[in-house]
Length: 453
Image 1 (spheres, one colour):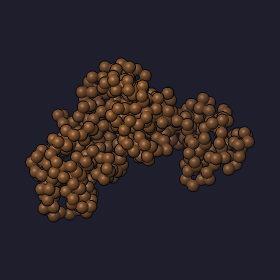
Image 2: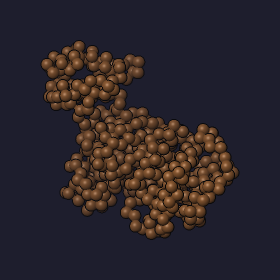
Image 3: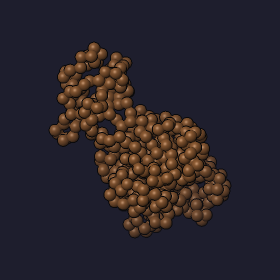
Image 4: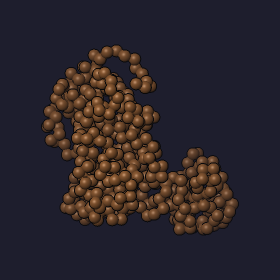
């Protein structure tokens, strides 16, 4: 409160800096709207503005971590139970030009510009998140006529229900134009089409520009994950990050609260992704478990198909809950076998994304399973869908992936009955009803979630 009074009266001094430093040492987040009076030049290690947004951080030296510590300033109210001083401080700001030293929650020291590869629902909704943080976005789409509509009418004719898009979003079908100023690239092309898409544009992609991937699945022909495809097609000189979690595009576009996880071998890139995307509606957690993120994002779509079939057959909530729970165990076993972490499978990119996809009415994979359970033919369902249900191709690839990538063992179909069962139904080898009945007649065994087989 004393600091708030000093700022209101325009008397910001070394005392204010000391109080801010104490607040930082408590781990609190102090918040101030950004308009009006600047604090001026004081002896803190840096003032950093969140990329494209109206929030700032004041940094202080921290010899223990050898990185600048920070206190965050944003238009939000005070957190962790501290008094809400934001109304008292209306009209106050910190000038980011005073000392733009980067903060530990991100290392963006330049003006970011993001190129989004893929103009579907998910690419568009993340472009909306970035533009809401005042970050310019270039959408690389397949057809110039779509780009012209986006630029002139500021809406997509086929996706997001014609929602109006900010003017910070620009579209083009020309690779040489899309990447020329990009400081980050967001890859949102479906997995089965990613390799061909990248081959068509990779000559224009700067060789060291980081790529943030939101595509999920296993490539049918090669059994490659997205991390493999990106390295094979765009080289090894760039850093990669993978964003995953329960995140329906239409809810994100509508500004509804969403939390996801970004994984990368680079801690600095993780922090940069947090800075790019995070705002009051979109929260980003960090991880270094790239393999776990990839497996979770792929397998959850297969589990969602099985959940949809269960609902379509009218088997009830008990059966669906049991099916999804056992499916999550199978997902965890696959991830652990190829180097992923159990903890990742218990997080947003594992069970979180699985629950959303299995129970959410917007899930394409759940809808595919539901229609199969109702007796529709697979070819009719696929032919009538305007968006890709990644789980269909992933289901077929996943059993081959398990057979070839996991250690040899007897009867893997008994160890992964749900994953193998979905693939068998999609291949036409059995029906949804017989598949579900087969699960109930499996040998009785202990329910153990922490064994290391």
